[in-house]
Length: 246
Image 1: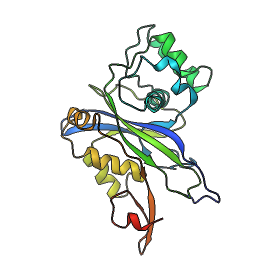
Image 2: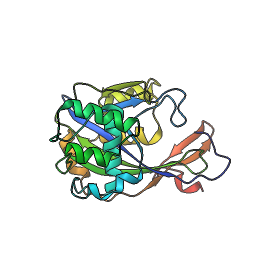
Image 3: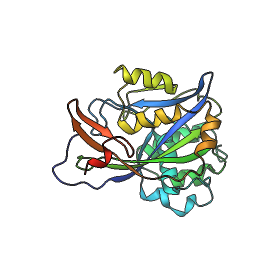
Image 4: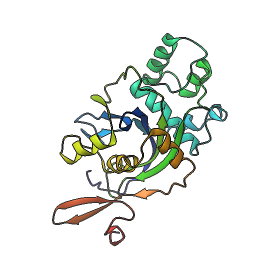
């Protein structure tokens, strides 16, 4: 992260861990950001982005599960669809072609996601998704985000992930494999991403993770940067030395 010259307010955002069953427990989707990205350049991260005004409109009132943080949940689902073409809800209004055109219109900003939901009769009320974490970028960073994290359970891995220029690659990986590659320097990730994967590594299955995380109170975690002999180290609440940093 590059320190900003002036204090920046964190922008509300949302991200989603798309998880499916695997022989070793669960696997999830990671996307790689371009090397020239303004935020998280070259890092592997979960699908996600900023929350916009339409994500909180009345259209969504009866189309969501009771997961909390409704606007953030819509943003996470919208970003997932825009960035990967994964749609975790039945499309009752039209066929696959209409979904492709709806994504194209969203990406070109010709239509709002709420309008897509109305046209295609999208209903996420039965979608298996839970809100389970909230991470805030350190003070002093040039770009800051206040990101809500969701866990989405899919019965099986989607056949295809269709990327936009916003990402360079996509992989499905288990928590153990991702953490092993991260430690070896082969899979660069931002601090909240790695910590989230560490947390998911403790669950034997997607269902266990969904059950354990459902309804758990979420406290915002402000990342702080500790400076020591080994350089700058990001810290989370509860880490040794965290409370010593202002």
